[in-house]
Length: 273
Image 1 (cartoon, rainbow, N blue to C red):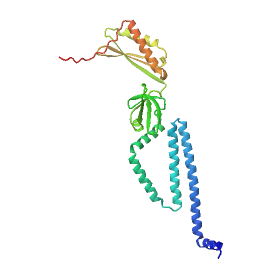
Image 2: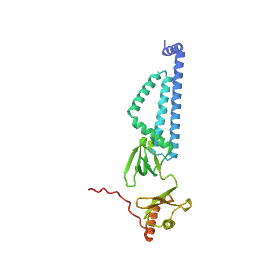
Image 3: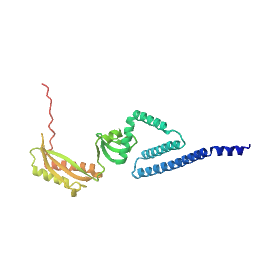
Image 4: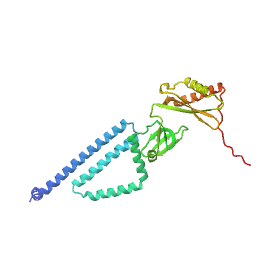
């Protein structure tokens, strides 16, 4: 009996099994190709979406790659199932390993999840002036597990993302305008109406104040050593520091020229007997 005759007899005997197995292989290949296509498509779309939101490049790369590999992983499990491999045990092992890793990296995963939420909700962007956990500075980077800010004194502060998300975030840059609030104390002997006129004059001569948003001048309180007035004016964000400094300078000069004293605050002294 020739070789081909043996092959024909084998196919005739096991034709249904062979055809069935070939179909499973064909479907497995189709599933794998389709899964890779879906993984690449979602990864590219996710990368494009994050790039359009000006997300940190490191986070864009990590997020898109993670999504791609997760889809490929599920695709491989589906392919093994199509080939007749019992995937229940594989999924159980993967689940147990994931649980163990999750418990071991609980803090890191918490920071990662917080980083994802910061990306989605964007309470601040790189370069904006913020206060996070009581620390003021400009946002330098938003990384996967932490956020870095640069303080006005040049210090680099790295804050875990979970801590960033769990505290109040003050963003000074997001709004185009910002209000300057000053408390000015003068001697009790000063005439209140005259002080109002002097403060208004100081505001009027200070450039870059947004007068259309209104100015607030009011008597605020009777302090321990002075009567205190509140001066509130609006400026654009980029002019805040310069206008605040110039306004304080004008107020001091105008009060001095009108012989109105700004007293030192009263301090309690501990006298030893």
